[in-house]
Length: 406
Image 1 (tube, rainbow, N blue to C red):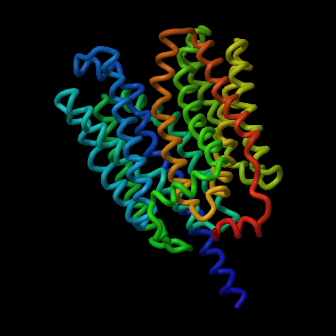
Image 2 (image 1 turned 90 degrees about the vertical axis):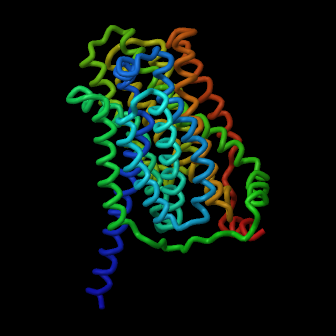
Image 3 (image 1 turned 60 degrees about the horizontal axis):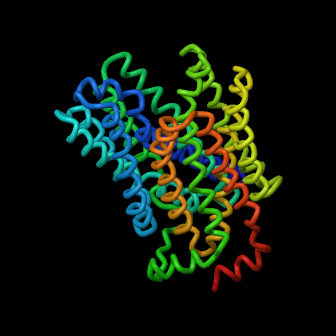
């Protein structure tokens, strides 16, 4: 009896580990497509004979279609079997990504990038919803932390793979390599991702508009969503600022690469978020993460030491990394019986912020100094910190259950 129980328990834990890794690497690969053209701009200009401004459309069109896709798939993900939607995502990415490399002109290239962005948007809301439904209560925050770690690492790993393949072959090979990676991920998901969740998909009978009204009747949700809009927005803006900023400091390409590599340490702070939330609570972890991010930007804006810059990059990424799971936990808590819809809205807002960030950053780089841009960024995060001061926890588990039944 004990031997059987141990075997079953071990099997369940192994399944959780495999599922967690699948969601992590899936998120890393899919969101990498958002950043993959950053090192390719010069190559695209040479191939298609376009102006620098037009080369930026390769990211903008992806971001726009990604935002549209988030709304569509966010609503769809609460109505269909999540396993099937994962398959649709990676089948679509496997087919469309290599086709981008075959584009005979820039217009067709942009069309394919737009389709890719729309399909890529199916992963994030589905993955977060799956984590909330499938993992046990004590593992939910950890699962979300791992998924967000993949999203954050994509901003570093995506351009790194892209530039490495570009240096070895050409820009067309970048999309072929990613197409192969998506195919391998598709095979892995087909065989290893659970086809059903611990809690079967529950589609509420209420009209979606009525659900939204009930959700948005809670004022704390607005505060959480404002913070959501600024988190990945700040991370992407910071990533856009950091390259020209380090070049302004006259650092060598090797030093710049090493500083960005060291900054990746901060991404893994998110894995401690589950422990920190249990120890200090969601509000304190969220506020502390935002303050750390603001403080690190101030260091970058006013100090130029290589070691301080390295520490500041780690602290900024770490601050954002722990803030995201804490914010999700608050949204889930205040979402109540509509928590899946609340997380869907969270995902849409989070990545719309990420889509706007490059345009915002490039505009500030062109119009003002990078230091001023960083001060503006810190002011935006300060507004999020101020918002977090007005978010209170739902009082007790009994009251929580009563409210969710209303």
